[in-house]
Image 1: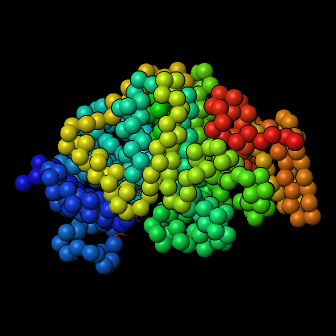
Image 2: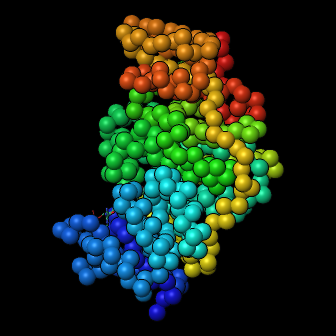
Image 3: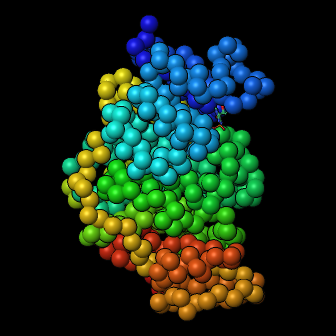
Length: 404
Ligand SMILES: NC(=O)c1ccc[n+]([C@@H]2O[C@H](COP(=O)([O-])OP(=O)(O)OC[C@H]3O[C@@H](n4cnc5c(N)ncnc54)[C@H](OP(=O)(O)O)[C@@H]3O)[C@@H](O)[C@H]2O)c1
């Protein structure tokens, strides 16, 4: 009998991915013994007696000593995880929203109950981000971490920009391939990468910033005019999550960026994710991989299961950090319909302005809270040029718009 008896919550895309990857790794001392799902009427690829519908059947079962939570409901997931920890059952989860919104409490519960929670699958699918930050980078002073943290938006941008597909066609294809979240607004409006960034901030810099405090703009307002603007200048548009350290403070946000050919992120296409870490000792390192999907994410979850069988836990050993999260001034391109009135006095500097018959744009420097106000209730779009200050520190990695 396996030493680890898994109670699995959720048997959708990732749950089935875990099942399949575990089946092919019979040497791992872990078996799935019960699967809790929601809908008793749904057809399943396994016999009906593999499934239960009441979470208590797993949580109250003393023979189950590992809970894997892979459901698509963050609030229910948090209830399940809390109950499991209180009962001394280690937890593996891939639920970025649940982890990001409750990280302080999860850390506290792990300490109180001396029971670990691992969540590699929650951040960039199969790319080993959390463990790499925890283990390999534990002695590194990270200056910046940024990247393409969402597979479905990168897939949509690739199809729209490179293959001239319509936005709706591209979104449909992302959903059909299992890259998109059940609720696609989480992807396209930039919430999903923001949850991941919030988790990364904890492991890279030792600070927890609740996702509500992180600015996010997604790809939903990108227009054909924006794409043409980028194309004419040899740029691509990528949705980036980015956290930068400035002495004692961290700036963090999610937004579309113009990216030039010189950036390694320019070449990351389709559902691939990429994480670019820049530290004092190692300088730049790029991790690239499939950020979503059944088997890649299943593998990340399986890797956490293996880690639990080896008594691994996150050390979270960044020194008690004095860093604080604060917003910065960024250089941005804002595009808008010609008949829309925007308050451009919010910009510190406007370096370029164009208003055509149907649409226009400005390029200038603005504080992030002011940008948030500017965009509120507007169909205007913003694309970051990456910011001149970051540019001087992180040479050539990102595009800095040169005013002609
Ligand atoms: N898809 C990806 O590529 C990916 C990548 C990284 C992380 N994740 C994360 O992994 C988690 C699962 O995503 P998914 O794509 O596998 O979702 P999914 O395909 O929509 O499957 C969700 C599963 O959760 C079950 N479920 C929902 N509410 C439940 C409840 N209250 N009690 C028990 N079971 C419940 C559903 O049951 P029924 O089958 O009865 O409907 C279904 O089996 C999410 O947190 C997601 O953010 C997904």
